[in-house]
Length: 173
Image (cartoon, rainbow, N blue to C red; front, side, top):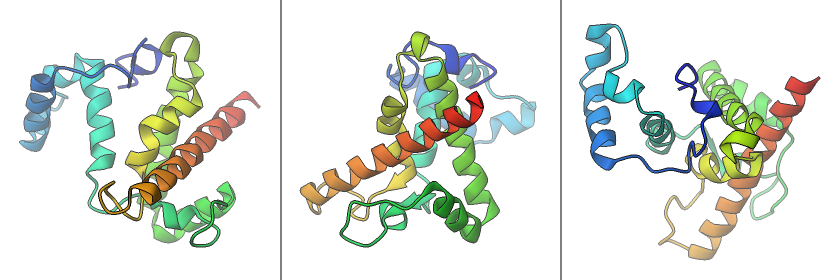
């Protein structure tokens, strides 16, 4: 995604790719076609929108979420969230893989937001894109309790956007 210029492309994460291309790319990835060829299939690597869609899909379909809304709240039922230092501490307890994958997705989002003048994607926009995919609500689906789902989704979006903003601040120092 980065090598293909995704973080500097107008419309990235906003434009929906052709569904057939996404399905084909998912099939190729599932069949490990890229391992045999030692490269990412052309159908995947040549379309930034397909790559962006696959990134979002990857986080949405993880069997165990990186983070849940309940893990970032100070106390159940409140809107106050934990500090970022506390988040990294909790991620370390979950395991290095969880922490590094979270850091990676925040970096991708920061790369895109850093090029806001071209991508039209602010940290807040990246929160909307990745928040619900990376930070899962306790309900999982809107059908269970729509108001709670929406409230938790907003928390997830805002918290992810905050992570992106902090990453951008770190880079500017």
